[in-house]
Image (tube, rainbow, N blue to C red; front, top):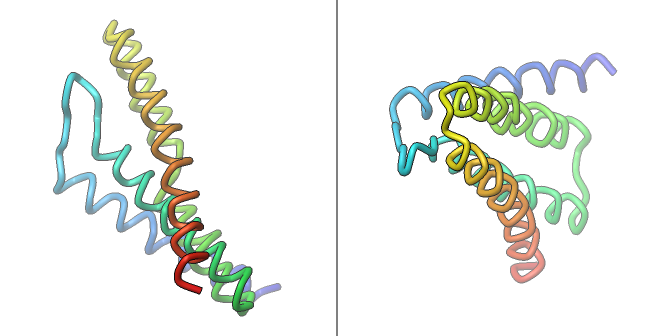
Length: 124
């Protein structure tokens, strides 16, 4: 239990730091939509899908799964950043942008997950 918790802790720290560094250095904003977070969520969900497919096909160590899936990717692709950006758009009266942002976020996150999973099934 302790080693799994440590794996989640360290993975989460690296994931959150990675998200922070990317969002501080890459500023993509089109039509009032913060695209950087959408790209981070898609990328993280893609990797999550690939890891899920990999772990299911080849087995895995509990520590690796906890470090990468729960820790790193949990810290990297948090929807709390999404919620904050969405609330900021609403507060600023950007209703259409907030709707498009929410729609794009969910669609790209789910697409990324299933694309990553499909890639691993193809590679075998």
